Image (cartoon, rainbow over all chains, first blue to last red; front, side, top):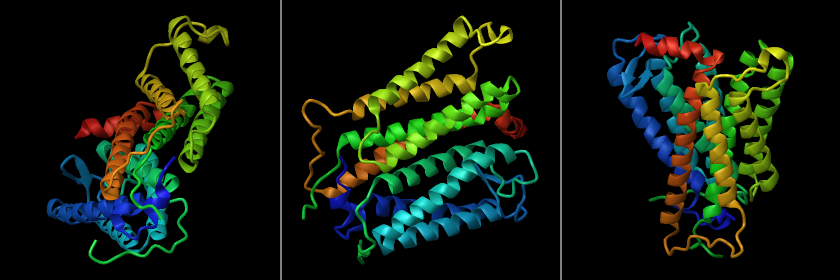
Length: 151
Length: 181
């Protein structure tokens, strides 16, 4: 049985799985969003063929999506457990949809995020983790665990 | 209020079971289109199995323990057995499908996920002596370890499920695109 009760109500970001995952993903996606602009300077805004960032193809629109998702996850993680849980659930659902739809659109004009196979793996992994943590942890949260400064 | 508790290892196994079932369910949903071309009941079978696995995954993740562990393990084992029979002696549902089918990427990887699901269900089942929560004076370390284990499980399942889905008709464009790079 989980001890999410204890973890979710101490007020420390690092004691709640939802806040910890949200913060880590938030920072990582913000950094990825910023780094993406260094490799997509010659790529059209919503080009279907992007440039690889490590092995993940990106275009400027994809970078902006990373920045927005990173900002949302980080903000929610710093705010409260319930906010982090809600953001993880929302972003997880979006990534799940994207991971599945991505399989169908890779070679089409609808691929406005310049997705490739590695993107699909990452999106599905992100979806599983975010949804898994949101569904299974911090179950007793009532939206009252504030973020604390200096975490 | 206690704040120093860690996590129960069976909780990790429950989440991993949810991930594995989710991945297997997605693969089965992805092959519905292929099997509808065979017959409506082939397609319906995979649609029902896929929906059941995704539904069970959400049930397991949102609950506090593995739901119906013995029944789920038995049903999953039955699916694997059905797959093994179809790949060795063939299923006599109709004269055309009586011959053994060849093993493909999608079905082989789905079976891997189902075997993982059974293993996780067994690992999450209550023991004679209750599993001891990972006790630590540092709850932050316990939470970080828990999250790391969940991340590893999510990555492993997606690394199996994505190529499996890409190997179906639904994902065949992914291969074409991949080769073009």
